[in-house]
Length: 111
Length: 114
Image (tube, rainbow over all chains, first blue to last red; front, side, top):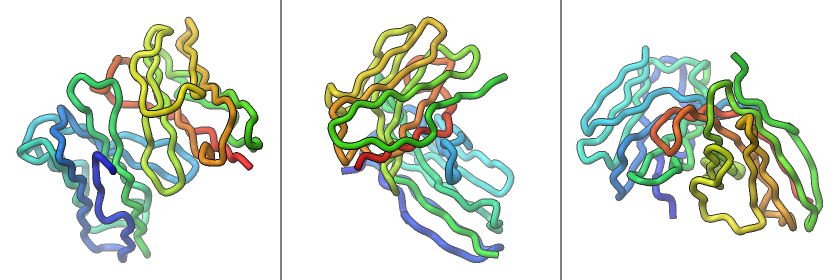
């Protein structure tokens, strides 16, 4: 059983479309991070959200942390082929040493 | 500033063999974490090292062991390899112990067990 469930697991859309990726849990996290991983590389941090209800924007990407700090979403506006990759959410449980990762959303943007 | 480097990048072993994977942390980072990423899955936490001591361990058997050296580089050792150990092994360094800061990942070592 995954502590963090990401949906959808696979998403293939056309350039210019909008999309939202969800990261859900029954656990409360002290913070949540989003990473992007490209083939043959390690994950790279996109953003960290800490406060319930927090919204952060990174160009065309908007990240939101749920009010109860149990879920998060990533919204991409006007997707571009360069957005293609594996998007991973990762939660920090209070008092734990590890980050708990979701299974990832593999996003493909077609030109 | 040199990032996290891992070696080897790819290797093939047979069941029952032993493997050692190496990681050089980013300059100034004293914490190293190891993750296993099976194909199509997210990374799973193996363990974390801080100042040469294990500082937290995931749900992995004792045949997974590690070391951290005075220069903060690290090794992951896996004994008695099983087919299910085939995965991408990621090393991540951080300037902060625990799970509060950004993890800086290497490119990983892809292990295939036949």
